[in-house]
Length: 288
Image (cartoon, rainbow, N blue to C red; front, top):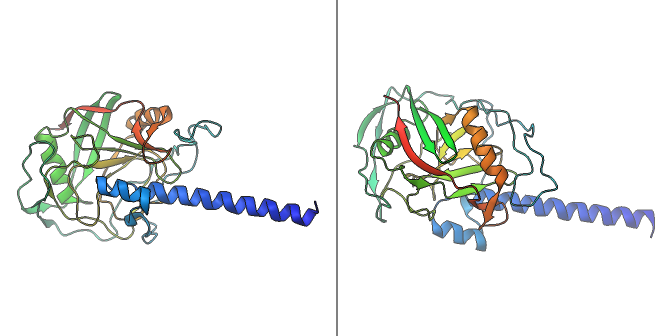
């Protein structure tokens, strides 16, 4: 075999591997939508909300790429690496008004667990709130930021106050490159459940996601309900379609790292499914 032919073959194999990796990353990103319909669509043509990438701003850096684990020779259902650098807390380039109007609309599907929507009306767009999620793997400490997403924070605190998240499981874990999140907030555990109402997105073009960011899962624009996801590692492929409304601290993330390192039960590809180590939210409590 000539040297040129050998080089051409190597180049062709490299291009094929790159295409396969890009396709896998795209599949992972598109699958974050919460409905069963979206999951089915991933298998067929993949959900479109992950196709479009938003503008890349500089106000919120993404997580660093220093690996905390190296499992490059391990199975596909475990992360090859997890970034250890915390992302800077999201911040709007332009602050919201002192108060914003929130509206929670009844949905077509019934609630997975009986709950009342928050009251419509004005809400302060400032201040932080603390929530503790007591889970089967330890306590996750959450800081909610009303300057980011006041209507989302109001909704989350309402659900916490009504014990909506108590005795529910985090039904989804993703461990692949470009999408490393733990998804929770569905009492049905099916990935399609919600509170029976929805509310509008609170996003902005420069929004980015990285290690420690808390955001709402959705099935399209303005379909927020109760499902949320915690970014524990790489989420570099996500565009700004998911309302970020808080952060988790490093000790909490280390607990999730252990869950990720145990791997997933593949459902939507080798890197996407239920966590092998179950994560059950026993209680969710807001600080007084």
